[in-house]
Length: 321
Image (cartoon, rainbow, N blue to C red; front, side, top):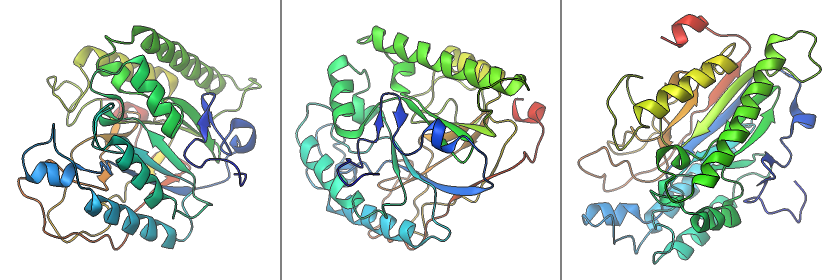
């Protein structure tokens, strides 16, 4: 990354500066990366006071947890190839009070990340609104980079998706169509290069997909819920990912625990990291809303990572059941 480049705007033109196909198309062996989400500055006080819609006027606690996370990530050896934050970067919805201050303070906290660890941002519902509009998407992209894009790391193709466009694009149907067209092109290209030994296109060793809203929480056939994608959308995406070979051949050795070791009963069920049909819950940097009480104090002392290895530990058939 050049000195003049904004580390928060590396995702542009549907790719990611420094992690391009030309630079990273070759498999170089196993590597690790960090996946986190929901710094959601402003949620902790709002949740405690039962005013998640209108609250969020304080966020010092989330800033401190973010700084502790950054410090823990910087201590990791070997260094992660990247850290991805899977949405809900701040709590304030677009166009509401505190939004600007929360984004500013989150960026200040994340600036301490070692420059050798790229920060990859994924949009969530609090970043775009539950029903995104062209203006909310534009605002997000101006602050954090593209809302959907691809990047390569050591021979692995990564796709970052805007899951709000799958959930409710009633106010921006053209943006939904644009992402659908782009995604189909990405999956078709990956599928053709994987199926043809004579293809001149680079063949990704693995394909990983990152988005905020999980396809499902427990089962692909579960009922629709606030925290998953609708059945029809879910099934269509799963079929498309399967045809493209997402999740195979690959192996993610899941060593994820709650983010670091926190002094409190914080466990995450919201959002996820998706690689094929294997659903990996990510760990929230800020508040976990699936608890009935919040700890009085939390400290991040270490951060686990994912390791991307050479081959799968289970068959393709078992992954897609």
